Length: 308
Ligand SMILES: [Zn+2]
Picture (tube, rainbow, N blue to C red):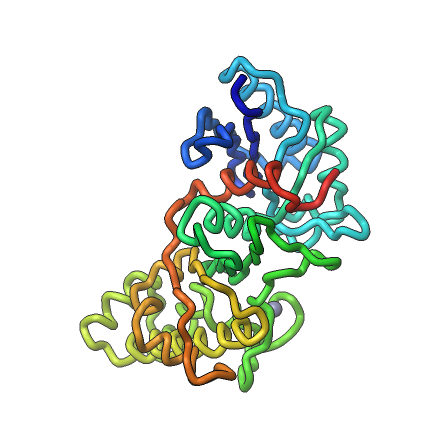
């Protein structure tokens, strides 16, 4: 008898992806299917799409659904209430998603936010493999993260664990959508960098164009990326002072930039660290866009996530 398969679903604003993994070879999906979310049609429609995808996975695999399915969600389920919050797929906010899915699918479900799923996948199967405590960062349109300790992703009573993107940066005043000012996300996210560059140069450019300009010595582009390095270092040092993780994996579109992996960026962290050395590896993710769905499946093999 082979080991029970791990089933995971990554619920995104535009697509829903499902995968079935073999726990003995979890780095390769046995089956992997996608459906458009059609989130504009509302909450009940999304529940129906998720149910349909599970049916499609049963058909493709010839297996019955397992007794527990892992689901990565945008936003986070508040453990105390079971309600989803902070989702950019607005119609999910305030809804008991995990509980409704458990009822509709007839299985137990484990949910976690997408950043936590990515962190779990990278820590278990990807760049962070072999490290006990892994801080998995998403640095892209938004700034978030997840903390994995010994193969389990930590959630916390508020569902807040890893949300370093809304820590304030000293001296920064830009208003954040969260209602506070100077959040890391308002300085280090892709849109924030593009805005900063536009304010300096008077030109609206995308980040990849700014990176090319910087490599050619354009002063506004160089300033924009230099600022990213310094502020990222400062923001990350605050995390390292508290968690001192064994490894940090930097995902997301901004996380792709070569400059984050240079000695100069390590020095920027060290300048703000309560220590005279900074030796934590800063790693590029290895799983690409598979991390979300793989992490969701791995929730069912760990004590991670919230259970409905
Ligand atoms: Zn904020």
